[in-house]
Image (cartoon, rainbow, N blue to C red; front, side, top):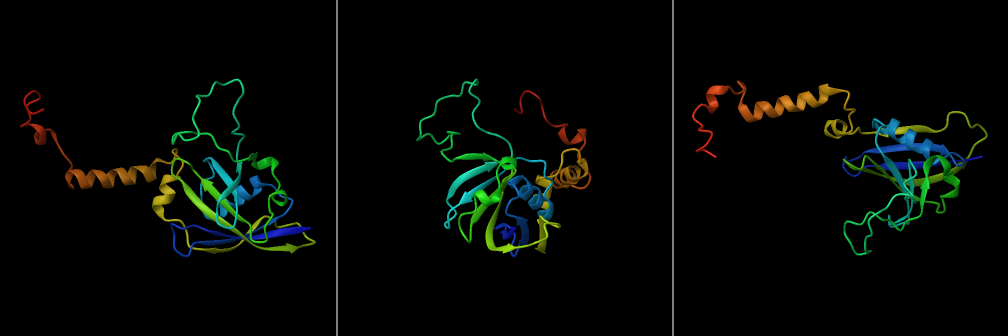
Length: 197
């Protein structure tokens, strides 16, 4: 059996690299789980892969869930030139149903991994080698890590059930706005609610 060795990059962090290995007959859902675990993401946001050509132009999209249009739902009609159109002309597939070996067509296949569309993070995967193994145990795996995501990125991807990260930021903002002592009613005593606004 064969496995793929990918190198993962993230442009926002200099020298950020992950080396990962995954069996060729595994699916993109396994690749998704491996990536968010070895990168340090929470794994609770929407994600998608895009199969790209050597110039990183998207050719196919593989999403976590089926995003094809529901025939019963009425969608607004968009012209192809509309900048707000949500239609995509890319063939769309679902991660759990898509085996890597069916999408790897280039010895240096380029794949984009897009995580959290509200606070987008884009990772670049490049196939390094296709190797043979007799032992399927231990796959998928991360074999090398360099650099971590900065705290600001992790706050954006933090689970909302963990309020401590959010509160620290809010307290810092309050200090900047009102000084160390905060504010009190006397600060607003000179304002007349009718004439000053």
